[in-house]
Image 1 (tube, rainbow, N blue to C red):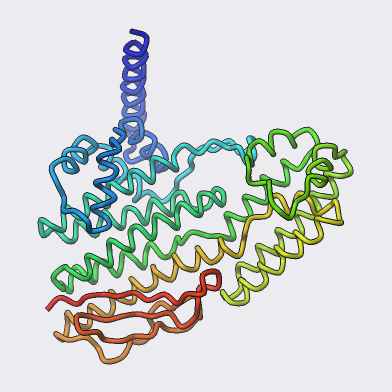
Image 2 (tube, rainbow, N blue to C red; image 1 turned 90 degrees about the vertical axis):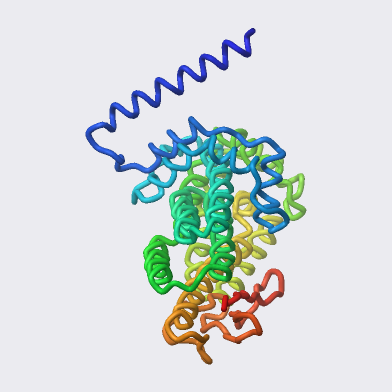
Length: 394
């Protein structure tokens, strides 16, 4: 009985919020802040069952075809998708985060954004199956725009945005490899991707926000809540039990020294991510190793060692995501040549987006059923060179 009453109360509250929001926006729709519509969509969002989650994952991985259960779930969330599509096209997005909470800031939107992106992927594949390729591509572009709206609040937001971009890029690659090569559609898609690229997620900005928040948290009166917010992340081999004792027993002077050390290290990290990838990765690894080494003998370095992210890895994740995005953009231009001439070019067209691992053009090679774009330098964390394969329908 109690659960039923709570359910009715939640439902009534959601309806009232929707009505109030609708009235407030009656004179100006859509609102200037995309988050208003995202939150409105999330109020109506119907969580998928585990079975449907698994089906949507299998659909993305090409293990199953679209089925009635997936289609029914998308239909149940059709208004959610409608609000999200509108929100994604609004430039500004302020989620209203309470940054005074420090690293414990609540960001419930991240989970909903990911689940919504999975829905958009499924819808794109269903639209493509029905031959509606431009509409399918538009679902992928919506995911890219959502990624930009969550990208730079904190490092976790930046990493979520990278995963969303990869999700969208995989779908666009599949669509480019299967859709009719209509020049008008490809020209439209190229313009959309150029527009999206202008607001690319910024690791520099995410790190700057992370630095500001963490600096305000490195204080005697906040250390317990800070360690709690960090969870098990602070238990590192390099940080000894003695170091943790020093943190918990630290006085105002201890935390003042640690704030200064942390700020200097983060300034170096933020400057390093602006360098070309090989130099950035080397510099970030050096900074991380130096901090962890100094923390063993210099108490002022302890909080930096605890709080500094694995920045070389985060940098690689960002470069990988942006390089995939550039490969998609390059593939669109190559496909446009085939749409105009009836055949793939023998060499890479000029002035295409580059492989960010090397800072050079992608290596281009025609294959029996399409073409391959290959990076000219490695992912230095995985010691792997990435390549992107595209089919070219006859």
